Amino acid sequence: MIKVGFGSGITSLCAQQNRIFIATDAGKIICYDFKDDEVLWEYAVYDTLAGDMAVENDSIYLFGRKGRVHRISSSGVLIWSRDLGNPIMKLPSEDSASYYIPSDETLFVIDKVTGTITWALLMPRITSGNVAVSHGAIYFGTEKDGLSSLKK
Image (cartoon, rainbow, N blue to C red; front, side, top):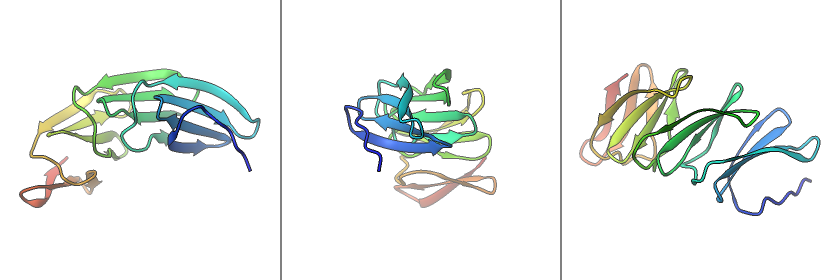
């Protein structure tokens, strides 16, 4: 059994090979190598994550509640950071090219590679905890209509 302290609470975990990526409630991402029992690097987010971080290939995607999305390399180097200008309170969803991020009354679509906001749409308040992406459509719950959808 491994027991390592990081000085604050853990809010999210992801694993890749022999590394565990740890998000803390103090606004840090820590890369811990459990095979060698050492911290490899730390990255300061200065925010609490909205949901879990995502690990894809050699990248880690972070979604801060204050509205900033980060993509860092698995070696802890910032690739891009994007400020949405609105708090992220719902869980992001994804497809192979984009993240779909509900924020207040706006749905943002961000390109995974560049961090560019592909499009944003002002819409009725999303009441579901996230959006779902499937077969060319984006699905979400709203106060008035129950289940709503948009074509991508």
